[in-house]
Length: 191
Image (cartoon, rainbow, N blue to C red; front, side, top):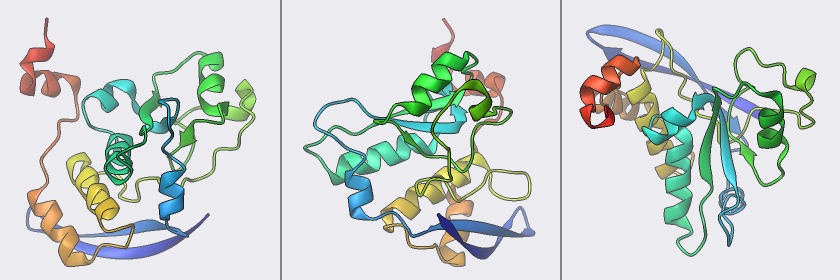
């Protein structure tokens, strides 16, 4: 898969930021989306940058993609998102990645995992469904990234204009980066 780089300029907290957004080429099509759904709940979206905890808390782009295809194909079963972070047993990783019903939705394998060295047969290439809005101190915050990804899905994978990015950055929720902050915001999680 090739990528189309787009330079985007926006302002946050009075400071200008210029980031590179790597949109996939070709972009996902309706047929690509339809291949994600099935008649039975047997597919998983495998995200290398998130944990299952991130998925449950709605902090993974896989959750947004699953909701999107569920709305688009209401009579079908959407895939369930699954995070790869926190899977330490090689056999579990192999079972998750090599299952032909599962779809890898990341830009690269999880940090620190040499998948071929543990026995994974499938080559993990950058997915057309990977989140092009990278989270980093010099790019987007997590809440911004997820809102931008959601808009990208709604726009049928067309690149977002700078003004649209700016509006989302201005309105996106600030998501916590630590478990302590999450627990403060969601006390119902504490037994």
